[in-house]
Length: 275
Image (cartoon, rainbow, N blue to C red; front, top):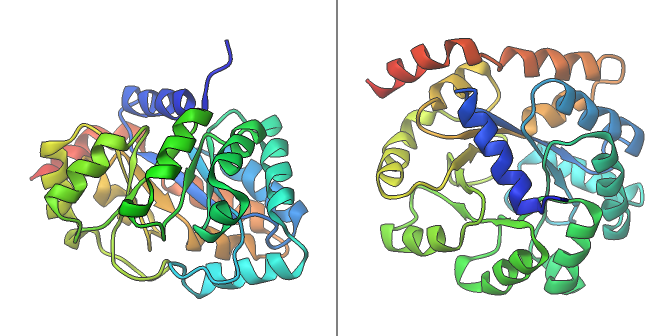
């Protein structure tokens, strides 16, 4: 029986919890630095410990992204990347790996495409979910309904300024996990998890929905600091930067991925972080 995208996301979460480690979700912009390079990047991340991979559909004005990912978006578009080609890329990547792949993009793209048609096509291409960081919760009902109908996760995005009442409403519609931004602003800036930990602790007391935390994570130390506070650590800009290396991008990405894998020390780290 073929699993839906929602089922594949949940199955991977169960795997993460069973191995007693924090999950890793990585990021790449489709078509950057080139389609061939991007394919190699996805395979390298999948082969070296990624639990989920965000495949970003490039957009001309990615307002939540910093200069690294902004440049990648612009370069990909300049090289002729389109939404149709992104669906084709997703389909090809699903043939290469079994880990859940999620589209991440800006609201303008699925709304122009048609929300229901976009979600249906995303599911057909093999996407397990979709993340739309600039879509306000009050405007997202149509996306949540269409995604669920298509069998894929629609991942809500929250921050530490999200009120308890708003979070409770978001929690009710989350089908896989909730994406928490570790800082307010654009992606890529260096981030300490200290500021977000009180929010994560409050949320964990009220909700059993898994949490993915991202924006600015670029080191094993930052990932380690999230153990017991989050279920998934998201690494974006740092990996996009590594993918730009002309000669050793795969080795650099593989080395970084291995540096953030520490399941054997998870219990000790969790105890330390809970103090």
